[in-house]
Image (cartoon, rainbow, N blue to C red):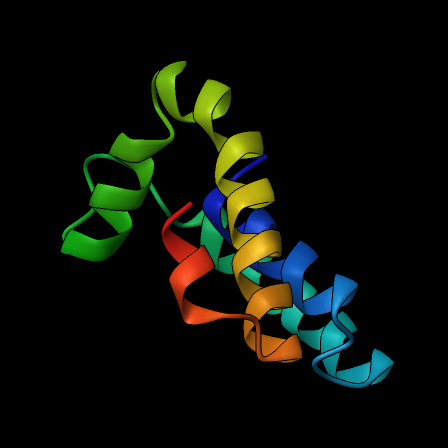
Length: 86
């Protein structure tokens, strides 16, 4: 699971865009990810590649996803703001 993969999963889970737009977004993001290498001149692409280079982010990614799902659900349902820190 990658950072972009987490974002795409959130978009899909909460149906934040229509199917056609989501498919195009998936294609565009996968093409962008292919260009991400550590030696890239683009600092964002280089940082993204460094983030995903080791095992640490791969271990942490599912927990980031679950946290974000809970956070988005709370935002969508207008959850109590005091409980967001729990």
